[in-house]
Length: 274
Ligand code: R5P
Image (tube, rainbow, N blue to C red):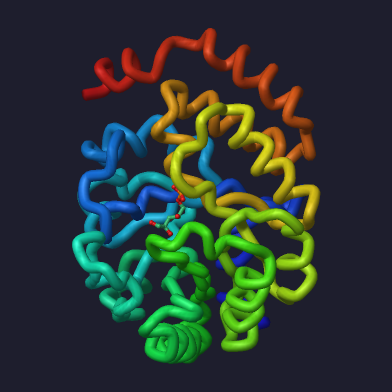
């Protein structure tokens, strides 16, 4: 691996655990002002010091992230479809590799829609993005999107989508957690990080997802709503870090969460920094 590519990959994953807790805040690119991400700057600021990387579009990066921040940026570069359309799979690459380099990001991310009407185009976009990325040392993350069909999240489907992504040259893959997740990991030769999906009913359920993913061999999380739609986003993030980096159990993470909840509420901190 070329030095530039290797350096960017090392920025994304922590040296000791080899894992990463990436915080995803890119939902607005097709969902608009998602609940508790309406004011992106206010949501992002308290989380930034505890995120191993931040998943974001260039618009939110420019408007809501302090350029003095040292958190590695995972730049979403696919889009141009919204939730108002039935078929979400018709995405294009909407941000150039030149702009990704200008923004000094550590990796770029694009969704692939395996089995969807625009499967072929999305896989071609991945291949072309990998070509451009390899040219300048930029790792590409493939996101195995499921669109509105959340039931697609089974091991057989996700293993296929992850493997195809790796075969086309993605340096890492983001996918969804499912039963028999180790089958998804087994078949994919590049690091997999796990998304959280819609907010789960309890914090415990989010920790169980994270714990299951790590036990199965995932290299971490790229999680959004289960962190920042929580009433205690920073506490959630710190507890998740404990699972991902220290292999903590769900019970240990719940203890961390309860301890962290005693810290001043994020709402008060947000008000103080507004
Ligand atoms: C979709 O908008 C993105 O790929 C998200 O970054 C991904 O789904 C992770 O966020 P969440 O944990 O909220 O699903």
